Length: 116
Length: 112
Image (tube, rainbow over all chains, first blue to last red; front, side, top):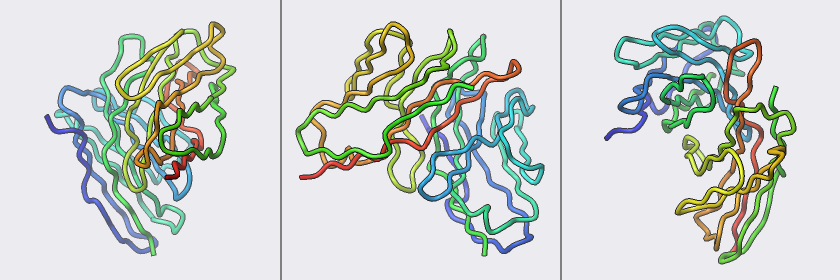
């Protein structure tokens, strides 16, 4: 049973460019969350997708957008890259609970994005 | 918002028991408390989850007092490979939305 897979593992971009990161959730999971983790910091919540729609969003600008596909996989897009966007981007999948409360998150190994 | 507070760092020696306490004064009634472990350049890994009293699995125990305003992760007989960052999470509910918020975590260093 494959866990959460992310691609690519590493990426180097320059300021102003756009990037797309991809995530395949753990088998049986229907919810995908994205986190940004700067060096030495805890993961920061970007947004969560469920049933192909953005259900929740953290304090990130509109440059950060996403998509969830019918097979539950997801993409994170970042436009107009800034130096400060350099970070480890983590995808986590989970199974939605009826009351929407705490879900056990399964994380991928992340995509290390460097913006030069 | 349910915010968590943990010690920034802890040191221990191989074979000792390590207890990491997390405070979460604003925990919601139906929130669970979850702990994750993270090694450098890897995604966090689920350790244990609980709602109240005590939960134990093959790697750790979680103690939650009756008021649920804090929790303690207990790692028995740590080894060098337990050196990692440990995060305590509770759900964060605001305006009917719900999300999981990570704090800064506790950096545990296990020495030989």
